[in-house]
Image 1 (cartoon, rainbow, N blue to C red):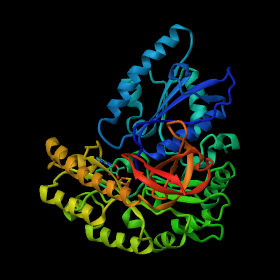
Image 2 (image 1 turned 60 degrees about the horizontal axis):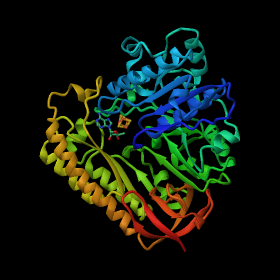
Image 3 (image 1 turned 90 degrees about the vertical axis):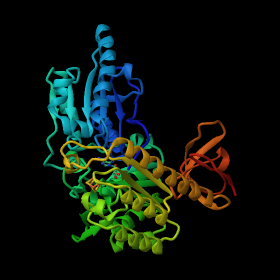
Image 4 (image 1 turned 180 degrees about the horizontal axis):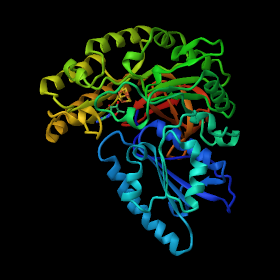
Length: 463
Ligand code: 5AD
Ligand code: SF4
């Protein structure tokens, strides 16, 4: 579950000059993008409007990610930069509070305050509904650290959005339905930073999707660290799984497309696979990380499945939906990974043929079992493997894109293109597609023919 680089939250600016301004910078995955939006909403309810100009901000929030590398170090150096702006504002008699949110906030907690005295508030991912109160206390001069896992459901405490707020987000939207993880893969911090698995109830999810649809959203991506482990009580009192939920959401007028991410292979049940066969609104794209192709490494990672289990699963999914685009995550250089293990990963990749993939060098995360293992792989070895793996994955991605050239596809038009006269949409397989702006209005799904595969996008013309 990856986004490239960082994104700004898009809380609505209602324009009142006297209102306080918040600048939110988002790192990491789509769940953080969604959280940043909801933080913006929570703050909007207490009078803050979003700004894209950090120098204008009365409050700067860094929504951080802790999944890999020296994430915390990056946050500290970013705070160092922002501290300068804070000083400049202070000398002009204007306040600027700095807040750290997200997974680094959860992992480091009080430590952040000690190392970075410029920080005024620290708030973990399960406490965003408390933000207005946290900000109020911080403005009163208190250094607030709020990183408890909330016992109450944070989703119930977030404000409902008005139409204008939702509309400002465009025709595609994220909707978090599940958070946390109980799987404890030995490389991963998520079970520690996001806590154990929690599913939102059906009624809450349906209500949020209906609001999104009413405001013009056509495509909803359901989010969760373990989204296919989602299970919730349905209106009939029985327990629903993700497959059933997808069928229900597809009934909402206006919702034309559904996606979900990120999934674990062990939670792909028959009902969900059947949804890929029987539910046209469910897009033919599946992000199903395997991490490695060697059974020895998979075991050490505590993935609790073998390479063959994964390959068989993909065969079943492709049996249900032959044109499905497979996407995955890979880690090279997990402790103990030998060249032969890495060859197993390459072999698995060649068998699956991925349309899209994210690959990473193993990064020791403090507090995880992997970090304690004594057979760490040298950095140079990881670099070399990552390069070789990425070469194969890039070739497969290219092959997949090229295979669409000449085909007529359904395109959801999303926004104006970077260049004049263009619009950008999404293919069913999640690729950005560039078309002439006359191909359709934003929010429409139109038939187009793919004419060319570029580096990052496809090009198409109206049919
Ligand atoms: N080192 C490298 N990659 C990691 N990921 C998670 N933890 C680590 C780590 N310690 C990757 C996994 C996961 C993705 C979100 O990030 O591939 O699926
Ligand atoms: Fe991390 Fe594994 Fe849970 Fe995914 S399934 S969030 S990789 S522990």
